Image 1 (cartoon, rainbow over the protein chains, first blue to last red):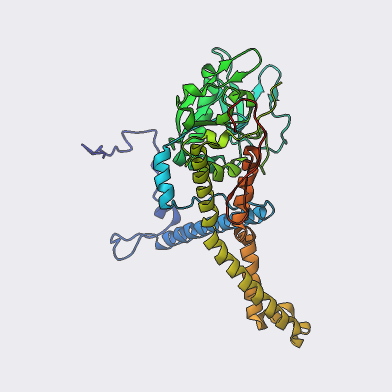
Image 2: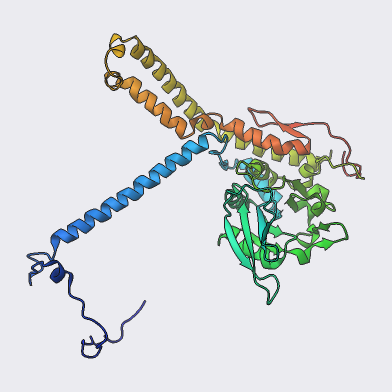
Length: 294
Length: 130
């Protein structure tokens, strides 16, 4: 609360010679003003006009919004399944009891090509790297400038969110302890994760490139570092090499480059809703058919 | 398959059936609305077409003469714009989405009930699977 301790004295035009005195609007418009404002309101017609203008402007905004909403609905008619996101079913007493027994699981999410796709502007070649498979009309959700190396101009990244990523995160944030584990650099990934989280506090912990296990040919992610109990942790990643050491704790997902009709995250919601009721995630995820060893 | 695996599969299946069945009441309501409205539109359309005045008077006037047909048709169009054609098949949409994921895990789902179907799987060569 701001308390005004003293009133600033009104300075006259003598004190401020450079400030021109502005005539009141009544004088400018040539309107007679009454000293008794209760009996005759000052410039009543002008106030009335401004109110009507405000009202019509507000109405115009509503009409515009309604037309935009209708257009959105009509457009979605031609994309099947897109209106139905997911309705979380009420828990039966048996499910409530099972959920207490099962305990809260940890869901590890990859970032690039799983939740988002990003491309960056190379200052040396003046080319967008990673955008060659995308239409020119594609509009990024975020454009961020990140100083990767000190004393060198920041690199511009264009971030494209996977369709339904916000809805997906809001659901899994309620069901699981959500952890981000990315092979990207922290300087870039932390900003993108902050944007995705949007102050919702979904991502409990974050792991970056420095936390990955690197070999000559691939980068893998150590789930032991996230949760010692492998019965309660699993990863969703587009890269099989990331979970090669934990094949029974992984859900594969298609790589996301840019596809407005992508529904992979929507497809996962019922599955993830049911998976939290298991005592050991490997009893379901361990059934996955693994590729034959080379 | 161990006892704990069986329990987990049962718990997993129970939740999937809950999810699928949770869509049933609203789906039934929307189907009822859609079918009632479709019947209403069809019957009123029949009367509208059979009316000898329809061919004589302008379209706007003929629609004014048959308010039931006009209202039913407009309502039907609005409901389709709002996506009623998806709401009436919501359980199938959810089931098909789930089946897309379950395929990787040698599992399937009964389309209407959400019951889990265990498919035979090959050994993963890591000694962990039964």
